[in-house]
Length: 234
Image 1 (cartoon, rainbow, N blue to C red):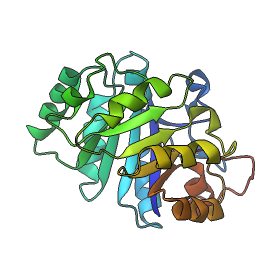
Image 2 (cartoon, one colour; image 1 turned 90 degrees about the vertical axis):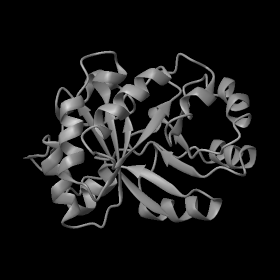
Image 3 (tube, helix red, strand yellow; image 1 turned 45 degrees about the vertical axis):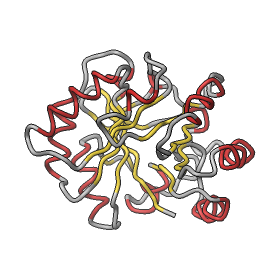
C-alpha cells in the first residue's frame, strides 16, 4: 500500500481540506504552527517520512480562478526526487498539452497529470491520453456513473483515483463503492482519496485490491505532532 501526501493549494498557500467545502479551506495550521508554505510543509514531512509521490491540487485553477502555475513549478524544481500528481482542473486536452509543454521546456519532468471528471469538457477520453501518462480521478459527486462506459472503452488501462470529496475529513470510507469499482475495472489499478482516518484502514483497503491512498492529516498527525482525533483529512 503506497501512501501519497495530499497538498491542496489556494492563493499560494497550503490549505486545510475538509468535506470538499473548498470555500472554507483555511491556511494550514498544525498545533498553532504555520505550515501554509507548501515547500516548508513538504520539506518537514520528507525529513520524517519516505515519500515517493505527492498529490498536488490547484484549487484556484479547479475553481476557474488564477492558477498557481508558478508555485507548482517552484515546488517541482525544489523536490526533483518526488513524482507529483498534478490536479489543476484540466478541462480540455489542449490545457494539458500547454501545461506539460511549459514544464518540459524547463526540463521539469517529475510529474503526472490527473484528469478529474469534475472539470472535463471533452468527453472523448482518448484525446486526454494521447500525449501524456494521465490518471483519471473519478469524482463521486452523483454523476460518476456516466463516466464508467467511457473508461471501459479505453484501450489503455489508466490508474483510477476514486475521489470521495464529501468524505474528506476522515468521514468514513465508501467500502461498498470501492468494492464495486474494483469488480467493474479488474484491469485498472486504484488509488482512494477521502475517508481514510486510521492506519489499519489502509491495510484493509490493500487486501481489497487498492494500490494507494491519498491522505493529508493522517500524515500531519503522525509527523507534525497533532493528536486531535477530530483533526483529520482525506
